[in-house]
Length: 311
Image (cartoon, rainbow, N blue to C red; front, side):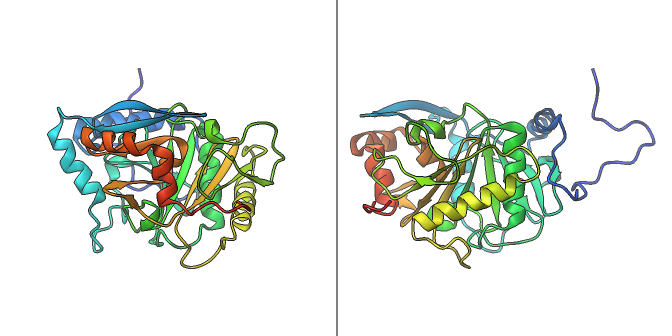
């Protein structure tokens, strides 16, 4: 068994990793993340929110998964309040907590644990210097996201502004591991031509999917950036406005999805990118019944942009 503890007389590791020039992650990246998680749980720096989970069926689509704060974990409700409370003069990412910092990802980003995760292994890709969440995604942002997905698979996502579900103003992309939710289940069925925007007629909100040829190699960021521009063009949405209009971005190894947003909440239920991959979060059991009655498709359509015949 190996240990990450320093040997006697060895210098302590810096609290923030030094920049790397390329967006390359070490081969043992996920193991390193798991070691960081174990230490952060032991120290109390990582504070997961315990949830219960239930499916909601939808005609013609895979079921939606809805999580809510466990009634047995009252203190976790306070953690949800901490996440959703917006304090303009507080920035948890400048710098991020050393105990939650996993690795450098190129010269511009750090990989950091989500302090209050609902899903295990939930990681954030945080810019080293402040950029607002409503600014356009940069070349470096796309390279960092592509590198993480190429290394670990899973689902990357971005809440483009407060209306899109962002709880922090400091620019951060997010990642959850394979199996946590499945974007591919909501993608158009049948063969798709790489680099071309398409949509799923079963989804009653404006959106654009673009099939990806794969993100491995040195040009993954360029592939993502081009796919994003294609999706934005199909939606008549600017790809580089500053500030950007509100939108959700989701990326897995096969697909990129962009969804324009018009509202942050449906009633008292906040919706972020994961809603458009079939995963919703509510505060309590009463809200899940409200959601079940309305139906998740109607809820997501209400906070998205009405679908036009060209979408």
